[in-house]
Structure formats: structure tokens, C-alpha cells
Length: 219
Image (tube, rainbow, N blue to C red; front, top):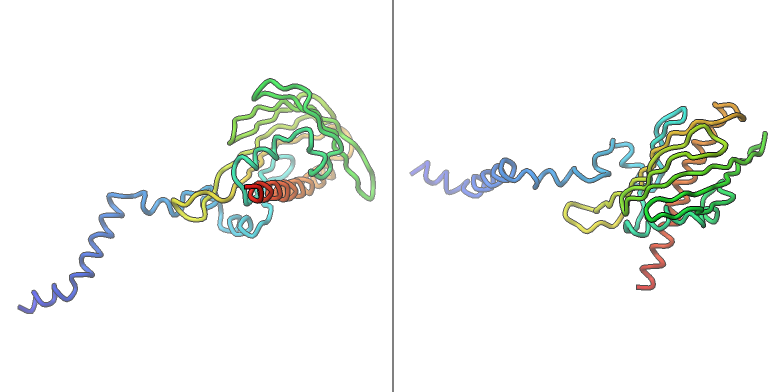
């Protein structure tokens, strides 16, 4: 009788424990979803910075990975990153930008970038071949211009506020390899380039969120 009363008393706890074990063993997705988002997989410090609206930048000497988290859908972010003819209107350092060839998902663009410091002012012309994979990735390769190399990608990933919820943000990841040609010296070039990268990602965030809010207001 003692053992029967003991089992009845802790029946709820026993059942709960069994159900939890079954979920963990036989339904791994129930726990995996808590940690499998594109932001959740990043280091803790980077996750915190992104969720605070900050730009993250890693790398050195011409090889960089830069990220920003924007409140938007994939389409709005994509439209900003492919608005080649209007880059000069919202990207810092871009004096001119023009789509000169359009072959569907393959394009050629030409830009004139301007750098001004207390020491000097210079312009650099670059021509890039673009390969678009809507709405996830934009790859670019150096064709011609005032650099030795400039290649990389833009990656867009939808982010949900919690597992199984509809996405409400987009993680934009920019990977780039750049090699300067001529003046200024490499150390000065890379310092300026890193600063410009952070400003560029911040400007993209502002433009994406501005356009997305305009869409929400219309709808």
C-alpha cells in the first residue's frame, strides 16, 4: 500500500519525465529548432551586437566578413542590394554607379568610388560582373578598374523571432576579398576600406528598413 500511494503521489512527475525523454529521443527537431537560426549559429558576442542593430566586421588585410540584421523581408533587402543605378544616392563613398549590361541574372556594373581624408582625395573606377541567385545570393567578380582584385558575395537569410514563427528580419552577410592597386599604401587602403565597409552596411540597413516601412504603410 505504501508504494501504491507513493506512485499515485508522484504520477504527474513520472509522466512528465517520460514525455520529455520521448521528445528528446524521438523528436530531435523539437529542441534543435531553438538553436538552428542563422543568427543563433553565430558567436554570442556577434549575436548580441547584431540584435542591437550594430554592424559586425571580421577579418583583415583585404579579407572581410561583414554582417547586419535588418527589419525587413527578403524581397525588400534584395531590391536595395540590386538597385545598381541608384547606389550613389544611399551608399557612402559611391560617386557614380551604372548598370551597363543586363543579361537576366548576369549583369555588369561600373562604379566610381570617392575617398576623402585629411591627407588626400582620390577616385577609383571599378567594373564588376554580377551573378544573381534570387533571393539568397549576389556574387560579384572584378572585371576591370583601379584595383588588382575585388570579389565576394552578398548573402541574405530570413530570420524568425522564435522557432516556427514567420520571419521578420533579414541577416545580410557580406564576404569580400580586395587587393589595392597603387596609391595609397596598403595599410592606409585597408584602414579606409574597413571603415567604409561598416558605413556601407549601416547605410544599407537604413535604406532597406526605410523602403520596407514604405511598403507596410501602403499595404
